Image (cartoon, rainbow over all chains, first blue to last red):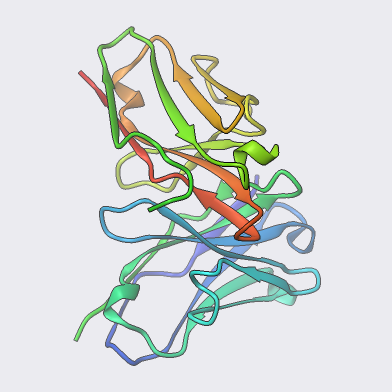
Length: 119
Length: 111
């Protein structure tokens, strides 16, 4: 069974850094792209970017380019989403999901990581 | 404002049929890129409902169906049930953004 397990909820202050994780199991982690999706409170889904853990090839949505960094450690089947300096507007639920290429749909999702940024 | 436009809300009585539209442009749906649909129940992660315009993953009831024509796509739900009350999102690739996009989402209310 494909499983994506995300790290727990975080409460941070503006300006702090953060790295959240997504661990995959039940499939060949290096053979599928992993994507990150943001959902701000009461809002819709936003496609942030994707990474291919096999070679760390990464693509970002123009809206998120330069705002976050997506990475992966294939030795431990884990993908990451990180911020160097959080803003209050980064408060959201973040989901990781496995991408089925080339049709580019997400067929399995993590449970989500709630990030709260508040002074 | 998403490049894929969905109605903010739709509603229907149990047993009825509802449709949710997803309108794009020549850089996404109209360019031939596939449309996918997700269901998000309250306080849960999204779930894949339809992929490749009209295909259902295993476990998705055949009450759910998808179609695509021109620059638009539609999700149809027949035999509405209370458990179908959720948010629904379409997704496609957009060549001008060089990445995928989601529609703004549609809240389905079962009356």
